[in-house]
Amino acid sequence: MRKAIVIGLTGQTGAGKTTVAEGLRHFGYQVIKADEIARLVTEQGSPVLQELAAVFGADILKEDGSLDRALLAERAFASPEETKLLNGVTHPEILRLINKKINGAFFDGYEGVILDASQLFESGLNERCTLVVSVVAPEDVRLKRIMERDGISEEKARLRMSAQLPEEFFRTHSNYIIENTGTAEDLKLQLRQLAGLFEEHIAGER
Image (cartoon, rainbow, N blue to C red; front, side, top):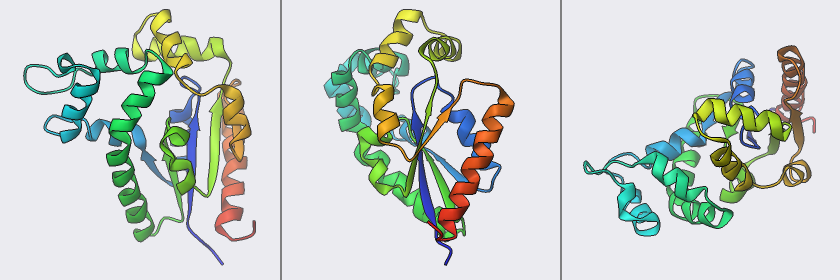
């Protein structure tokens, strides 16, 4: 009997999770990006903004009422404790919208949904998943990627890295691990193998 599954995709910042998500999309899975939903709940006019301002300071809101995302990131990722405060404010609404999107994807006929979420474990979304896949990569590789991707200093990049769960946590709490350290062909091979395993779960064979 075939069934619908939710695959949680997470991992270390800078490890290439977004690349993996897009690769899996080509195998016919719906991809739900938690970061996009997080941005949506912090758009101008959202009641979440006032809650964030109360926690991280009124100056994180610009004169027009929109969020100064760079300033919030600087404060919210300064330590694991600050990141936890951010999650406490934003996660309830993010979770509500994600569950709505998952149900919509199943209604549309998708048998597999990829939930791309950097805060999968911290938010408790892993409990919603049939399987969890984590993407990891060496520290020096991730550092370079983050600095180039976000245009930030090494110091700020390291702050973001330190605010996350350690690599060992991902390895011990995931069903599958993607080692994103090799060539593009190596990554494609891992994704093909992973898609085959997903198909076994959808087919009800595991």
